[in-house]
Image 1 (cartoon, rainbow, N blue to C red):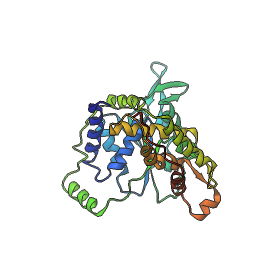
Image 2 (image 1 turned 90 degrees about the vertical axis):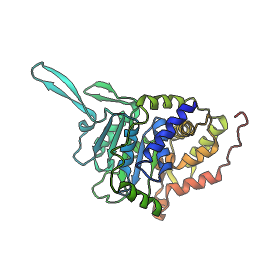
Image 3 (image 1 turned 90 degrees about the horizontal axis):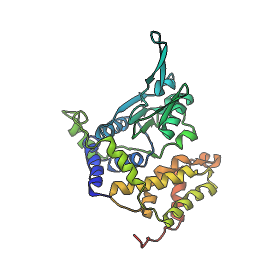
Image 4 (image 1 turned 120 degrees about the horizontal axis):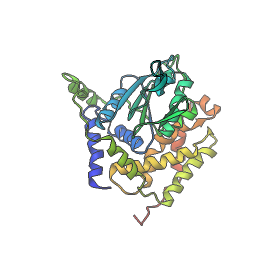
Length: 317
């Protein structure tokens, strides 16, 4: 990767850090999803900065940002848009919905009905919307950041597995530590740093980084390593369903994106180990026995990673 490209990624991370304190790893994972051509689901307790992180990323790349607060009465047309009839001309014109954006924040996505959740599927997968048989292309890049809270689940509609599988990564912010909490209070005491945040790159730069990501080398032993991990989830007695081929492709693309962010031209086993949980854990379904025991997909995935031999370094690098 050219040094200027690496500088773009560093500039993004540093810019977001002006607002989001102590979450460099989370910000990096967010960029992995963006440059990997996928989408991200952020799940955590209220008040840790999920929405602020999404807004800060959108502002930093200088793109079109739209936010949708998901509620039980939200309709698919409220997201995708609809055709409006003009009585004077006798024709229909398309009124675009908030999906026509570079960054779409789907806030509390699990608070709306499955039909409305599903209306995002075509947009997330195909980067287009179809209304009354007419297809509209979405801006590039197109990135969905969905949030959901872990608590106050009454009246929510859990995301179906098919929709969960559309998210490249599922990440958590977590609480700040004591020192970070003090820094947050100091930084926000007089002014809101988000208000003065400026774009450090343009949307076209993200598209270029996405294209560069595709050229990151991933050797055959690394591909076999990914396949071994995915196959182990399918054959594990702990899971009712393992990861699909979309999971293995997601892990490969996420690892390539991480390399692009870190200025490396090839994927190493540590990239796969680092990203296996955020890429695969939400795609796995525990069997009923494991659920009753209170087991987690993360715990069993860690066991799989511990038991699969790490490929040796590829000397051609």
